Image (cartoon, rainbow over all chains, first blue to last red; front, top):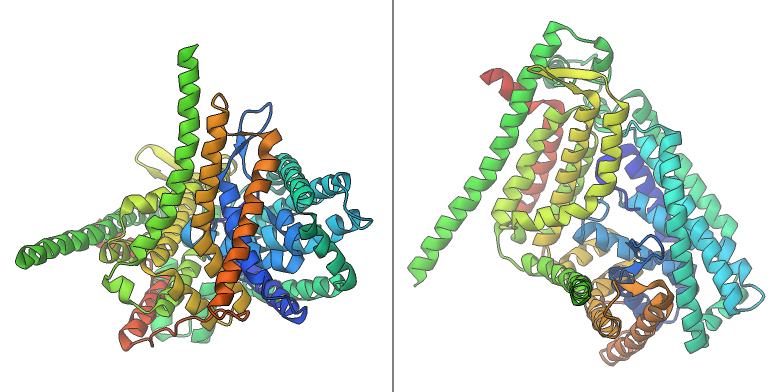
Length: 342
Length: 281
């Protein structure tokens, strides 16, 4: 469910960054306020690593013969509590984005929201906790795990659909995209729920104190969920609103920002460099804007695309050649250095 | 019969090898980050800012502007060559990001069939063009992040995260998760080997055993966390991790950072490949 940078617009990406940053700041403050014993910090760190290790083990999904692995949001929340679990998931996603190319830097905000905020801060406190409120039994743990994992993944997948469509990179219609994503994640959610429940029941039988202490503790210090929701909603509206102001009227924010800095917009460029560059841009660009599509075929446009195409291929080749030249040069000087050394 | 058994054995061995190879991958990037090239020596904050700026510039490109994007290939190409990051490593890491990107990209081909231009007799639709844009964007943004990670040691990155006012708890979590994921993966690998030896005719772990298997791994991890905590306490841990102070950024670091940012904006406005094409064609 990791989203990639390539499918996001800067406006959506940065808006979700702001929302996730707010959730991280709130959770960190919450943990500090609750005076988490410092014994829990190493446990959180090792749990993050555990999620990695657990994801490496594929299990066989019965009947289909295909395999999958767990995401771990609900599992962590049930073992650590929602705020520590959320921060642990965030750490895991950050590492995945940086070192494994699983989701990009720009998409990190979206991924933290879809796979961290949704299961840990919404599905767990709203579904899991009420379902095991009357006391822990294997049956209640199983029901709570499956319900909250399915709900969390459905909501997360729906967020993926919304974020992707808001970015406008894909031409997939809403209905088709949702019809693809939701059933797939229903199956994944059911598997995740079953495994989460199996793991939790195992842990509950072997070391009941791990889960019991958490449930008792959270009963005493009840979390103001309404406040969390309000803060997150406000953040979304503010950042989304501000960013969509320029995202809607101009296809991209950077162009808008450049125009703003110059004191004028791209089309009615005021003068100087920006006018020149604006003219070059509008008269020469390979696919000047979205409007181009409606312009249809005319001789000028096809002439433009020949130069554009040739230039693109050439630029790409040039970039590759530059890289190759540098590494060849480095290798040669390196060999010389080694020879001199010997 | 025997032959069938052998193939199953082989299949089991592949999954074990998979875990082993992903542990190897974990350490591969760390070894690359220990290099001493000019890119490695750049200040981590300068690299971080440049990478973020570059990615936003690339992401801001329109659906169909494949030509304009091409010039952005220079940055990863040069960084890759100077830092001596192997190209094959970057390609291998790029693969897991592909499926979802391809799903969205190929759907564009199906839904966006209007012809954009002709290469000789072959018409290229807007959908194909946008698929190309998505793939180029994905490749560029993945590569620059991997180059950042492959040229900057984890401690330095964690240090910069702390400087960016990211809560100390999260920075510590990132550092610890990173430190322990190799160790726990080894643990999982050992358990998995033991399991496969007892269930040779089976690929992966049966769903029925998944709970106790993962649960066992979890309990072992918790046990390890307790020992880690004891060890940290012995070394004077009081709830906050101390990070070594980073070196100050030199003028060269900022020149690099400003140059990357400036060129990202410049090429966003000027279509370099078109100009090049017009000079030559």
